[in-house]
Length: 312
Image (cartoon, rainbow, N blue to C red):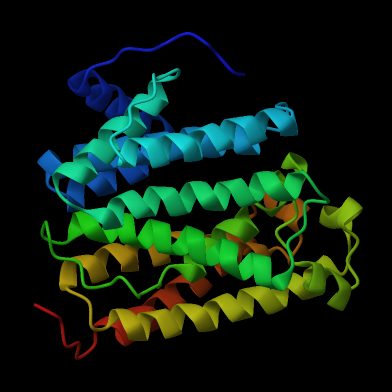
C-alpha cells in the first residue's frame, strides 16, 4: 500500500479531480454542497470530503493488513501536523494533495476550525485502526470520545462553509451525534467484516451479545431497539439546540437528519434483523419505514423551526 513515488498536481487540477470523485462516489453529498455553499468556497470543502472518503475507505478495507493501516494513518496525522505548520512533505498520493490544498486554504483564510475538523476526523479514524489492533471493541468511554470526534468534525467543517466566511460562533456545539449513531447502525454489519464492532464492551455484556457471531445473535434485536429509541430522543434534543441556528444552517442540518431516518426505521420495520434489512425490500416494511420517517420528520421540523428565534 505504501509508495515511494511522488505525485505532482496543481491546485486547479486537484479541485477538478476532487469534484469528479465526489460526484461519482457521493452524488447526493455533491448536490447538497453545490446547493448550499457558494462555488468559490465549496470547491475547497470537496477537497476535504474526497480526502476523508479515501482515508475512510483504506481504514475500512478488510483486505489491507492492520500494520499497513497503522503506518498509513500515522502518515496522515503527520502530514496534517506538518502542512498546518507550513512544513512541506512530498505527496505520495493524489488524495494527499487534496489535504495539502485544503489546509493551505484554511491557513489563507485563518480558519483554524476547518483545519481542526480534518484533524479530528482522522483522529477518529485512527481510533478505528487502534481497535482493530485489539479485539475491535470500544469501551463506553472510548466510544463517547470517538462519536464526539466524528460528530464535531462533520458539524464544524460543514457549518464553517455554510456560514459567512470568518464568522463561526459554534466552537462548543456538537449537534450531529444522532446522525453519527445512525451511520454506525447502518454500517454495523460492514464494520463487523472490517474487524470492529460498533457496540461498546459494556453493552455487549448488558445484552449478552457475543461479538464473534453478532449479526446472527438473537439478542441483537433488544440492543438495536434500545439504541434506536435513544437516537430518536437525541434527534429531538438536538433539534431544540438547532432552534437558535441561522436558517441556512438549520435547513442543511434538518435535511441530513431526515435523510438518514429511513436507515434506522428500516431496521425497526424488519424486526431489528440486520440480515433481513440487507435483503430488503418488501412493500409493507417499506411503507412502515417511510410512515415512521414522515412522523418523526414532522416532529423534528416543528421542534426546530416553529417560532424559531434565528441568530442573524
